[in-house]
Image 1 (cartoon, rainbow, N blue to C red):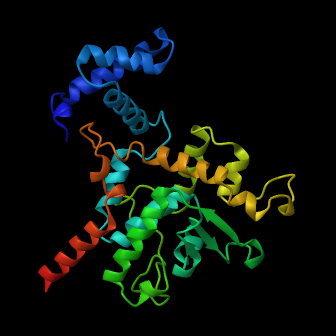
Image 2: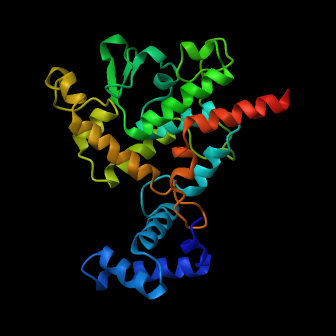
Image 3: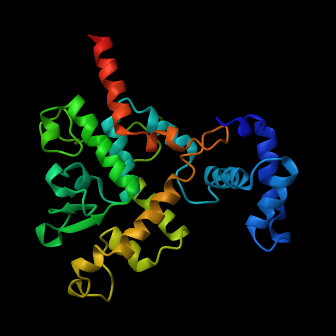
Amino acid sequence: MSKTTNKFSSEVRARAVRLVLDNEAQHLSRWQAVMSIAAKIGCTPQTLNDWVKKAEVDSGRRAGIPAEMAEKMKALKNPIRREFHLFLLLSGHRPDAIKRARVEHVDFRTRILHVPKPKGGEAKAFDIPLSRAMVLCLIRGLRIGRVMYPAQSREWLFPAESESSHITERKEKRHDLPKWGNDLRQTYRTVAQAAGIPELAVHLLMNHSIPGVNAGDITRNKLLSDHLRLQQEAISRRILEAAVTSPNGSNAGQSHWCAIPSRRIVADLTEASRAAN
């Protein structure tokens, strides 16, 4: 937590957020309201803006991943499952397709994950543009997998001790994780719409069929264009906006688990393994 945030109690933060929301209409923009209130309580406008966005997500007024859910995801005992659920949320895709994703299907140079056999068979194969957060998620999963499941991780992005050698069970107990599987897919869509992503782009990113448009009209180049990847980046940022703000209101930044370097997680796993032995 920063020294600046230490100065403000939860009551002061909550009051500042209420002042912004209650007085927003009296200003030309929310940012002007934020700057006005921030000057009165002695924090930076960006800090107050982060508090407001977090409060809106946690209350359901703003699409995103509530901090409580992010903490529950972080608390999952198996870090591979944690990355699996995060990737489902960041991609908006069906669990069955993602749990069968192979190492050979990801191209980090072009930032693409190829899905060769989705629902509908090989004829429906498609590519998922990867945001930076999605790339970090996959890298963490790969490196964690090499420690936890050395043999299985040679082939699968989300390895496990199962007959298939990859994650097979997508569910968690609801008290451990309130949303999983297709719940996360719906959250992705809601966030994309709230972020103002064009409906066509949302359909393409989620591999939905598009009424009135022939499959041949949408080329692979269109799917892999920088424009569509920028839309993916915007969705990822919006999803993680609240997750990187800690419950006490401070911006956790790089210390938050969604942004922790994989080498640190691997080091912790290795140390825990040595301690257990």
